[in-house]
Length: 289
Image 1 (spheres, rainbow, N blue to C red):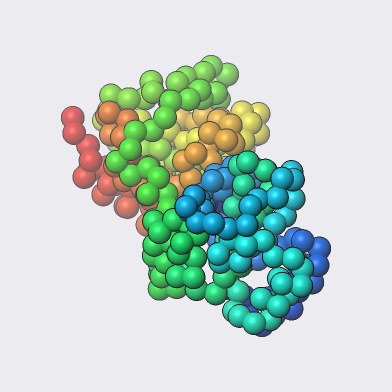
Image 2 (tube, one colour):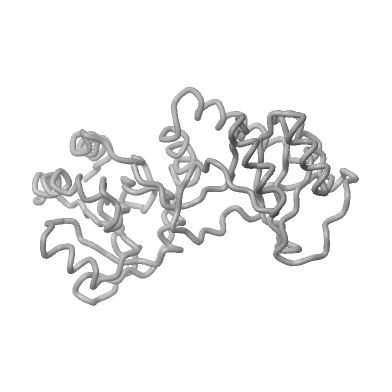
């Protein structure tokens, strides 16, 4: 599974080695951690995820632009000495958000999620606790699967322009009225390329049935054409913007089964050795001719 985008929350547990690194990076007001997603990304979804309680009287935001601000679990701004003291005193976890008003990147340092109640919305804390449990017990793949499903399962896909390999354009909505098997991929995603022979077999098996097989990538049409000189891919292929692709998933490969109304009914995130059979089972479950 290849992760190419940061998701809504960036959080990690501070171990012994990381604590040493944290001290050094805090001096530079830069924080680097073990991220759930790695990227070539320009995602903006991290904005406004963490909302402070408007009734809670905490220290006001600094009126500065594009600075890095550190806060404790109650929302108080920390200076360098306070940050160092906190890092030395507790096992630090960190939440990152972007303050919409100031443009500042803000890191909230805390020990337990429960410490954030009263400053962070309870719904966000409950979700973070659930995600931390999934990450610990099932791994990051299950966590990403949950996040994408939370966003898209049983929701209608948005419309958008697709540039096809032949240079023509289509609207995503034009694929409605038939079941659609939607694949998100990109050229430098090794697992995406490896599963193409299985996907081609799937297309062959359903070639006489009213099912659209569509693969979307943020790669250019020219780059895709160069790939197809050596690698067969029988889906209809379209190029979309990175921003549009990132609306759907932070992971490649990802597969959606979309019904005739344009509603996402099934989601598979990541690479599976039995991807053909998994998709076939989901197609049979959802096809309604």
